[in-house]
Image (cartoon, rainbow, N blue to C red; front, side, top):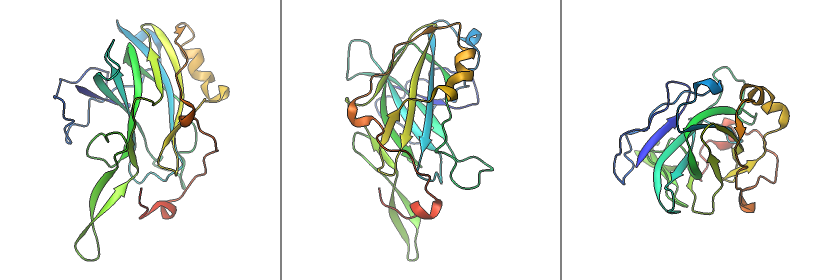
Length: 228
């Protein structure tokens, strides 16, 4: 299994296999966002998605998506990671705003696998991350916003030479990632950039993962010391 990290640093490539255990120190291979269809390689497509959070992100929020093995619904070929963090110059929580980005990915079916903040691993289904922090007396163990998801999680398909609009994945105060469509005006610029590509299929979103309430920006004080 390989881990890929989606960020704005370098070109996308599969990391070498690291076995069935996800190494805590392996944060994946950075990947450059794609802004022009002309930079697609063979066997690649584009996914456009947004990541938001109503929790204040003291540390970056990571969303993990599993590239599923063809013909094996329980198999995983690789894991990709998408990151969202507070703006460096933001006054308060700016992560409730939509931020659609295009990413170049190998063609295949991807499933939402987990989310985590300050986690040393990819959480298993319904698992939470625990970290140690210095307390008044010694060290204390606290939980972080995190959760793994099972086979009933949202999926999207990336097709070679096509663009898939996968929607918005938002971390809510319920410590769950919930999906909603990205408003058309937020996608207008990216639709123009990828107008020459065929349209990929719509994402598959189970009803239980659909966002039913608007996001409310929470502050650092709202979320400091909460248990998840």
